[in-house]
Amino acid sequence: MKVKVISILEDNYMYLVIEENGKKAIAVDPAVPHRLLDIVKREGVTLDAVLTTHHHWDHARGNENLAKEVPGIQIYGADDRIGALTHKVVHKQELKFGTLNVRCLFTPCHTSGHMCYFVWEDGCTDAPAIFTGDTLFVAGCGRFFEGTAQQMYKNLTEVLSTLPLETKVFCGHEYTVKNLKFALKVEPDNVKVKEMLAWAKARDDDDKPTVPSTLEDEFQYNPFLRLSEEAVQKFTGKTDPVEVLSILRAEKDKFKKPKERLPTPAMLAFQWALSMANSETLQGPTDRNMTKK
Image 1 (cartoon, rainbow, N blue to C red):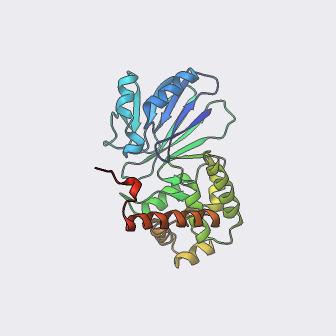
Image 2 (cartoon, rainbow, N blue to C red):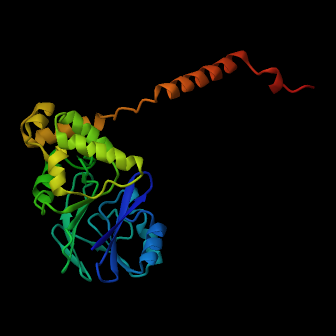
Image 3 (cartoon, rainbow, N blue to C red):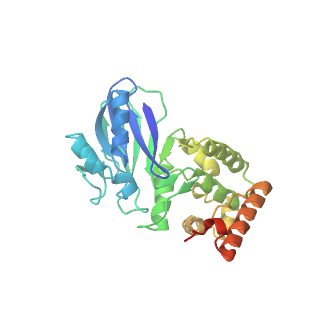
């Protein structure tokens, strides 16, 4: 099973999942359809279906155009607000596309109709994949726009955390560096968080994605999956896991990553340029900028 990670918009990901030895493919959240179809053509595969995690425009806006460009394409999701929806799915429903298998996992909270998709391939030794949309991120979780901490707790601990540890996590956004900076605030002595943050910064500097992670990785540095850890509970001041999760998410909503300081010479140059601009504004136009009559 091959997964093409496609960066789109400001920080979104869409995905193309291709059979290892076949020509069938499925797409996840293809919000920029022309780019997806270019890759489909280049890979020489047939796009059979779209899996939409939720109705937000940056995940679902490409569905209508794909429906026009690829007659008969099947578009799956769990929310009637998803554009061009042809098949509404439910929790634990299984789908099959050639040798690719999909299990739908209902995870309401970020939106009331959010669905994750667990994918594996017959006869393939590759690790399975979970496409988590805006429910689980690398080192983070999604905002509770249409749900509660209790729902997200169930999503993370009863639905996603029970998947095989080697499962690869493909999320909907590139939020990793900011998420890890928050994780470091929560657990300042977590060596794994520090190592992962250094790695993610290097990837970001090279304009490379930080996905996928694995569930096993996430248990080591994602505070939203570490609710029983002493440091996480100390940070929130709570021990009940749902309350811990609720406060973590509220603190993350307020969290601003530290701004990178300019090197001293650059800062001095910037301040000089700013002072010159202010000086010109106060003095008015110079002779050479004035037109003679």
